[in-house]
Image (cartoon, rainbow, N blue to C red; front, side, top):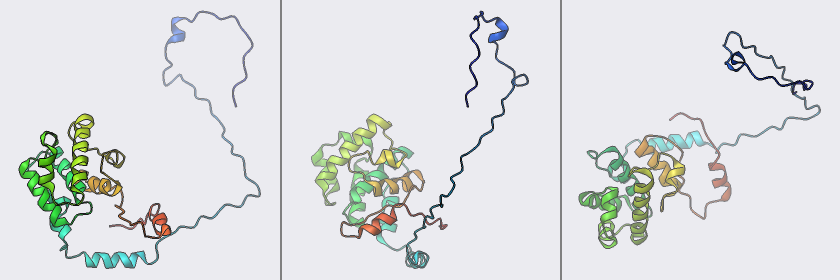
Length: 224
């Protein structure tokens, strides 16, 4: 509770010693006793922890299937599309661009487009200096290439203005960029920033709502 109010007294000017801070030795700490009200007669609600059925078995199958690392994404994915000799912020930008181009596009097509972009000069400044027609010819035939020309240009302008030519270092910042969704953002965090922020969910409209509902909050806590 609050301390009782003192009776009214005549105010006196503070002396120099009154305004000096107290030393750690002379300061006295008041001991407060904290008490909590008990909820009598209230039964605690038991929350059920949901897990996907047989998820550990399924994870084992996935690890076995992926042990060879021989899918196109292993050789042509966003981890392979950037210039390893470029400055760090340029590499991160190229990772983001490759992810933007990869939507609705085969890995082989994305890799070919990124190879042409890198030869042209895949930096924020150079993309902004490139006209839309030239940029379209460089990334064609990636899926929805006309829209991607617009998104890459808008994103590049935003990166130059707000991030000094680098990409955001958070999922929240990445999804603010035109043409960048949560799946791309999580992949960019992993590849560009080496931070695991979540799982990229590429669900379709026809998947059951219950599956999508459970996939968001569930955390397995399973290592690896």
